[in-house]
Image 1 (cartoon, rainbow, N blue to C red):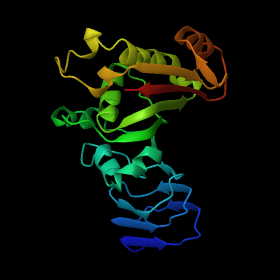
Image 2: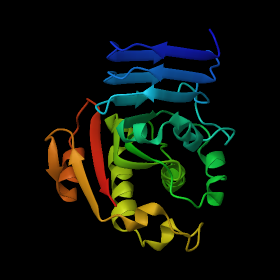
Image 3: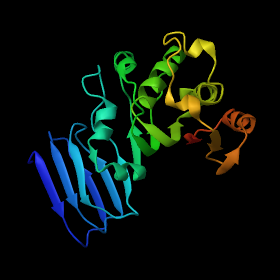
Image 4: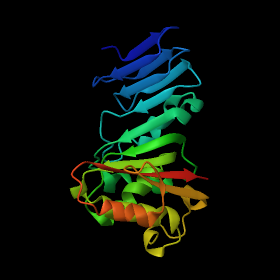
Length: 228
């Protein structure tokens, strides 16, 4: 595989790109591209020379973001131009470097890049790390929607409660003991809507929690829609 991939086509509408080779650049010139799925090197620079206003961009970085050696925020910032991020749904899988990753976020002061959706496919069982995990992620991107799908036995309810308190009860002191009075962008949220997948509509938080108590074997999904 080349370190640099150039794709050019006026007819191309759907593109699925998957590689585990070291890759430095992906350059796409496809003005009618409607769907782009990327699973590859998280260090690559992805550039859209031309793109459709209706583009749907799904990205699943192929490697875990461990030990802070490369940040999720840099992966997002390496997608050009900036307007493409409005269509980006980013899937984040298991990361063993939660504690190490959050060591580097205290130096980040600017608002992170805005994306369409942050999709979580992993949650640590250690509730003491919930805040560190989400603070790391939300210091890397500013999503309009946060969604997560976990198996019932992974403890979806505790994480859902934590997410609700983090986004709605933002002044809860114990969440900020390790950061003092440092402000985060989500402190300015105006609206947070909770959606539970099995009724496919916005519901109140109590209804969502009651639904999560059901002994369902299939994966369950919860979505938080955010508005600054």
